[in-house]
Length: 280
Image 1 (tube, rainbow, N blue to C red):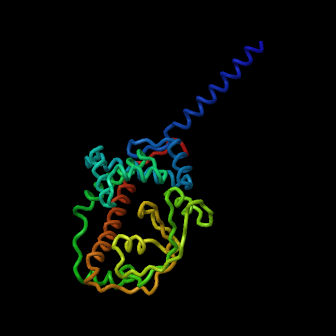
Image 2: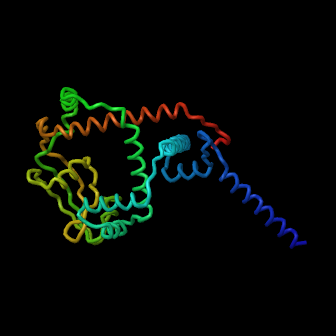
Image 3: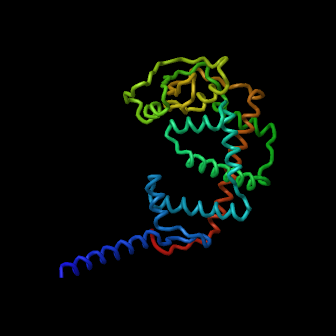
């Protein structure tokens, strides 16, 4: 009798577990015949720490983007990914093996990194195709007006006040970035005022593109690793228009491209056939 009861309980638990698993894997929403499961919604909600409604909208837009990639015949293969990784490595003065080693020291999974590179290339190719006929080159008058309205974006400070953190291990610096008040063994720090005149362009760009109160990305430096906590930009002065004309053009183009991309996908979203089969 006891054996029968045990079997009955086990059967009931198994049935309940199977039913729950089936529900989790069930299709919740269909976007132009492409399914979104309850599990995908749950996973997106938890991993990104966003409300369920935002997770749903994010997944709907993802399906629309995937459909657009398929419609336009856009793809990225392993050779494309490897070429891009080699390009990024060369840009940083290293090879791909060294870059893989540095990423591992920073706790970055190599396959996850390659996946992000693939997604980046797909998005770049998709956006390039969408934008190929949407934006005309601006006149000088348009660029000068944009420069006048955004002069702060084209200014260079005379000095930058920072706190420099250095360590032989990049993971130690990552802990500091996560918690600046932590006492991490092996990490040294010092306050500095860096003059921008004569500074290497790469470092100048890194510092000026980092908002006040934020850390720069971790960079290799003489066998160790360094990050800067930017504290203050001292006496910023706008550069002459002719000197930054290319940068003004790039910033203007970036803004217009973003507007065009958003408009393109807003239209696709409005026209999408979205069916809710199960309320998430």
